[in-house]
Structures are given as C-alpha cells and as structure tokens.
Image (tube, rainbow, N blue to C red; front, side, top):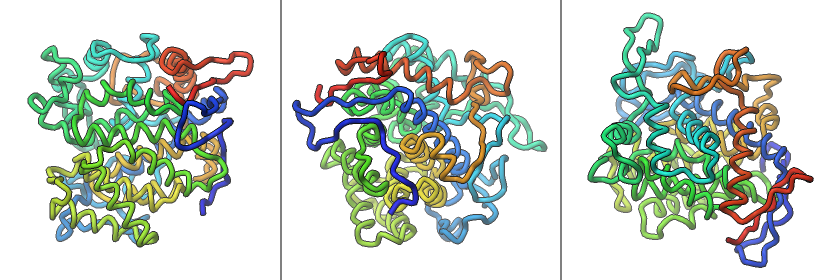
Length: 442
C-alpha cells in the first residue's frame, strides 16, 4: 500500500480500452500547473540525489560492488572515473534550501530548452530547424564552453555538459545536419545510449491524456539522439508521462504505477529487447516483490554478462541496461516517491537518469505540495539556474539567483498545452472554468 493519500486529478472518466465513445477528459489548468511544479521539484531532488552514485557501480562487482539498502546514508564511493560529486559526500537525499536555485544538469536542461522553444516559437510541434537552431544557440560546443571547476582545488576544464549521443548530435548539427538524421547509425554510433530518456519525458506532460499526441510531438526530439531500441524506450517514458493525467484516482499509488507501466509497455515492439526486458523485470517483481537488489543482480547476470534477448551490452549508459534498472525502482518503489528515488539511486549504472525520470513523474502525480509532504520539507528551493550548463536564456527572476522558477516554468507550459490541446488534439480551452476539454480518441 502507498504511504500517501490518493491525490486525484480533476478528471471525469477513465475507461479501458479506449474507444470513440469515451467521454472527454476535463483537466483543471491550475491543478495541472501545481503538478508541473511538482514535476520540476521531484525531478531536481531525484537528479541531484542520483548524481551522488552516478557510475559508482556499473557491473564490476569485484572492484566496484553494487550498492544495497545498507549503503544508504554511507559515504559516497568514487565513480568509475575516479571522482566524487561536489555537492555532498553521502549517499542520501539532496535538497537545495530556499534562496539557492537548483542547478541545471543534463537530466533537466534540455527538457527546459524544449519547453522554452515551444513557448518562444508559439508552436504545438517543433520542427527540425527549430530543434537544430535551438541546440546551436543554447548549448555550448566543445570549444566555446566556459571553464568549469568541479572542486575548489581542481584544475578548471572546458565543459559543455554533453555526453555520448547528445554530444554527437550537437557535433552533427554544427555540420548542418538536422533531426532525425542526427540519430542515424551511419552518423551517430551513440544512438543506442540513454540520452533521449532524459531529454524528452516532458513531451508526455505537454500532451495530457493523449499518448498518441505525445509520441507525435516527441518524435523529432527523440530522434535527435535515439533510434531503434533507445527510441522505443524513450517513447515508453513519454507515454507514461502522458497517461499520468488519466490515472484512476481510486487506485492505490502502487496500482496506479503498475497501470502506467503496463499501458506504456504495450507500445514496445513485441520482439524488441526492450519489451523482453520489461517482461523479465515485471515477472521478477511478481515473483519476489520485496527483493529489489536481487532483481538488479539478475539484470546484471542476464543482460550485461549473458547478452540475453538480443541485447549486447556496450556501456553503463546504454539505454537498455538503464531501462532495466529504472523498472526495478519503478516496480519495487510501488509509487512511493521517497522509496523509488532511493532504489533508483542505489541500483547502479547511470543512476541519476532513472531517478530523475521517476522523481519527475511521481512529483507530477503528487503536485508540488505533495512532494514537500513526502519528504517532510517545510520549504525547499523552487528556483532554477539554467545558465549553470546552458546559455542565452532570459533571466526571468532578476531579483533572485538563477534565471527561472518552477511556477513561471509551469505557467509557460500551460500556454503551450493550450495550443497542443486545440491544434493537435481537437480539444477545447474552457476559459470560463479554466480547464481543458480533451477528446480521448483522436
């Protein structure tokens, strides 16, 4: 059972399977704004918590053993690169205090960019040119990025905060290439990495209740960096975020999360490695619901070592190994945002990415006050410092550190959703009642 009360949306109906006779979904815009703020807060808490263990344990148990629950609260270990994080020395939840903005990271800053581009261009769907030009304008290259000093006594280095497929896509854009060619295997050998997961979940929230629309507007952003299995995994997360607006409020939080995962899994090609990984982790959870670490260890044996289900492990930031790890935290966390982030942080591999994904989604389901209540926080930062990693954005909070706030970010996204509901879904904006009326069947 969930430890939280059911916090339902203002919605009228949920019927499965979908049919043309389904009543339209009605969503309060003010309620949705609160939940978008919860998304950003939950994602940032999870991102900066997960960063503590990023690349600490990546399937080399003899030298870098996997973490378990007993490691929570202990001192952080060095990553495979031999370094530590600069913001904390312990494996524990991380919170920014009021007055100090959350620093941008690659789990949040490109989603912020896409949100900005939608609002800036007043569009319900980004074009390939808008994506390319937005990346080139707002994301540093490998040569023009400023110096970054990770620790006070470390040597400053040029850092553009891009890695693997994101990095390669940015290089290809400099050469004049646009999505989806930037993810084509002939040009981008990193196309199977995790990048699209951490940059595109927000498109599900921009298309509430309509995963078909979410997948449509997310297609080019996903194909900026991912193709094949990584593309399908990214779509899985997008669909879950979209369907969160339609989750049945009478279900327990555990039942809600199970439903979301089950619905999204139906979008995976049946013969794909992603679908088989999903089935494996779900089956393991059903058989041993209290043993998350055993599930993680089984993933290591089956996929990293044995190469089962036509998946050949390449790197600890593969989309598929992290998809498997993320499912462990999603299932075994059972809808509890605190426990889900904790397991995701301990599970291994590129641990900040699954934790940020689920922190954002569960934060959305809870709303910003629900996130604070879950962590027993009287107050916490709700401002954002995008210029930590990216450039040339307006300073919307000139009287505060950072450039933006979760409330302002949510307000702009509401305007984008207004367009998407009308232009892409055939729905209506009921200004009198401040709600969207969204047909559930296209």
